[in-house]
Length: 264
Length: 299
Image (cartoon, rainbow over all chains, first blue to last red; front, side):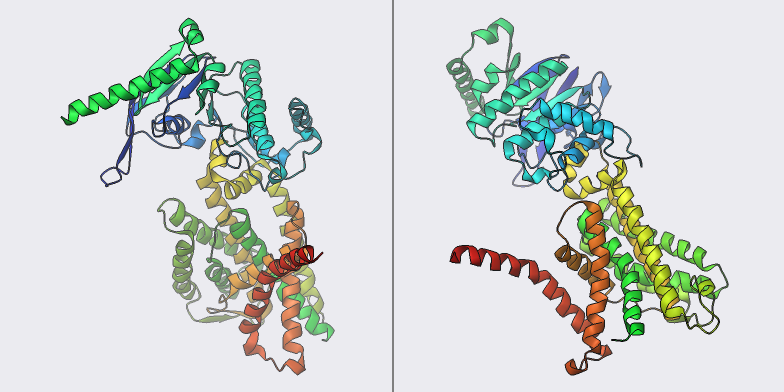
């Protein structure tokens, strides 16, 4: 279970560029839940994900993974519980290393790394099996450099890497945004399969309201660093993109009124 | 060029192959522009010369030199990782500081080793007639061992983590790698190798001198770049091989340039020739590319 408790984060505090991104964000993810996160630019979606992964430390508030307080842990210290796929296909893999070396890095995620061989023959067999499930022919290209792969192939491999080791939560940060529509739907289908087969707890940030409703089992809308909408089950099933847009507009409007009141 | 002159070039080339392997770790594997070499090379020399002149075992002297070099590299990395000092600047600070430290260690601007027992002494005849062969032979053994050990390390889990740290630090952290620790470790390893090279260098040259480190980094980088031009980018053992060959070829080219009478170059022109060679090695890949693309547009 992932629990975020009243997270606050302000970038560039005390400068003219001061930017309060998280303003008391609280959210609890049950085990096995696949939550999609939407919100306008600057709503705090990516910052929230970075706070869970440990890339940024919140100014205040607590973060728990399975009851353990991880608020002060670095990204690398949390890696045993957090798997991640980035928006930029270049960010999630090392292009200078081979496919099998990238997979080996992910296979040892969160474990001690010693002087043992990084890629053992038994690992290679495992990699071949898992890559074959992608149906991209990558199982025969273990020794190829990652940089030779297309963006879609790299995202597919990134997803595979995220599922090689068990994790408490899988973070997907608009991981199809940089792909063409056909590749994006392939990667999305693969995401559904991997999350379902491994029973993963997942948090997916997306810009597409369609994607947010079609995938996962719960949808959360962020606005100005807080959760403003949280729907699941029946209620979510009844929603369609126009309804969501309507809700989206309404929260924004209300927020404007609030601000107007405050300023007035 | 005579055989003796050729072997002399190989001897220096082999020593700088160790420097080049160290530079490969900092500049290429860790992506850490590190100038500490200009200080850690004479540091290794100063430590080894002082210990040998004091009657200690020459191999022990090399080991202590390696440890001293590791400390220097670790310090540079620490200044960057913990204190946030720019990489290049951190290494310059350590390099400058080492100049004073080296003088302190030696207690004088130079320490002669004429007649002292070096690592080469047991192999060489009383009259020194076979020194031209035995010195390069022992150095070649050391370089081959270092190269193979590095290849094995970079194929290990820890070695792969180090490569990931230099290639994509954010991804490495997301996989649970402490990139800070890897940078500290890699920089220590890099400068330990360079210090060992310094320790061996003073034993072939008959003494240590405080100014012997000037230009070390340029020569090391030249070897790495020539190696990359020489062999195609591929697996890591090929890259380390290219680096070693690059160091040898570089010294050979220098020797040829200085030996060619018609060029009229003398020993004091060494740094100028170095700069020209490195400049050429840097431009060559680009020239190749533009030639190729030029042909394509023509056809």
